[in-house]
Amino acid sequence: MAARLVPGGMALGRWLRRTVDPDLREIARLRHAEAGQLFQPFPDTSEDRYPTLFDALAERLADLEAPRLLSFGCSSGAEVRALRRRLPLARITGIDLNRRALGKARAADRDPRSVYRQAAAPDPGERFDAVLAMAVFRHGELEARRPASCSTVLPFARFAEGIAALDEVLEPGGWLAIGNAHFRFADTPAAANYEADPLRIADAPPQALLYGPDDRQLAGVTEPAVLFRKHPA
Image (cartoon, rainbow, N blue to C red; front, side, top):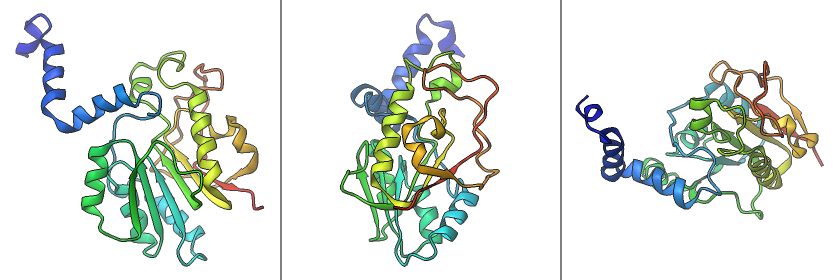
C-alpha cells in the first residue's frame, strides 16, 4: 500500500522484485535478449497438468517400445515427468529458453532417458513420435489486455513458423498436441497434412481468445481440438 502513495513507487517495487528474484530476472532477460524467439515468457506449469491428454498419448504410443517425445517449452519439466510415469521407456526431450526452469527440470529428473536442452526450436535432424506444445503458443499480455490485434505481441506468422519447425521433426503417423494456444492449428499451412483426433479434454477447455492469420481477434470462435495425427507416409 505504501508504494502506491509514493510517485513511481509501484514501478520501483516491480524493478526491485525483478532485481532480487532470480526467476523474475530470467524472465526479464528472456523478454529482452530472446524476444524474437520467445513465445510464452512465463514458465507457469503444474504437475500432471493435462492427465487426459497424457493418458491418451500413452495409449496411442503403446505399440512403440521406446517412443521418442518432445516437450516443446518444457519449463521446469513437469510435463516430461508426467509422461515418464506413463511411458517409462520413452526417450523424452524437453527444450526451453528459460535457464532457471531447465535447471529445476534437471534437478527433479535424473532419468537418463530424459534430456533437457536450452533451445528455441528442435534440431531439424531430430525425429519424434509425438510432440507436445501445451500452453506455449500464447502470451500473458494477450490474455490480460485482449487487444483487437496480436501483431505487436505475438503475431500469427511466428506461430506458423513454430508449427513448421515442429512438423519438420515429427515422424509420419506421429502425434502433435497443441493446447491453450491463442491460434488455431487448422489455420497453418502444415495442418493440411494432419487429421484432428476426436479427443476432448476437460483439463484444457476450448480456447476462446483466438487470433487469425491476419492477426485480428476472432469473434465467437473456440478451438476444442488438442491432438492431431500426421498423415502416414
